[in-house]
Length: 132
View 1 (tube, rainbow, N blue to C red):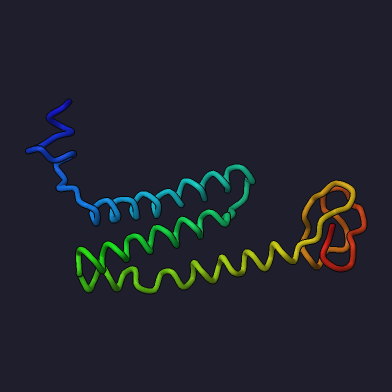
View 2 (cartoon, rainbow, N blue to C red; view 1 turned 90 degrees about the horizontal axis):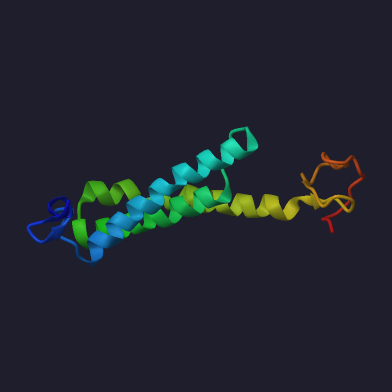
């Protein structure tokens, strides 16, 4: 087992240094978004993309871009992550606006869309502006 973990004095056969850790961290964070989205979809029993998905996408892609810029210096790798942060940021902004626009039911505390007149959970009339 020790031979598998340490090859020529390298953990998993990898020459570890700061930027290698940044690159692997980026891969792990970026890949974790799959698990978050899968869990959220299974929990709600409908396809959903939670806010955490966009945060993991943003952080993971920025870590990978940093690795590409400061260590790999590969134009292909840099270009692959140079602009991915734009839709992630946009989706986070949209998510924040939607969350702020929702109304809170005074009866049960359920959050409903801003356009809703009645709570989808208990049927109570919702306030005109904002919420409780």
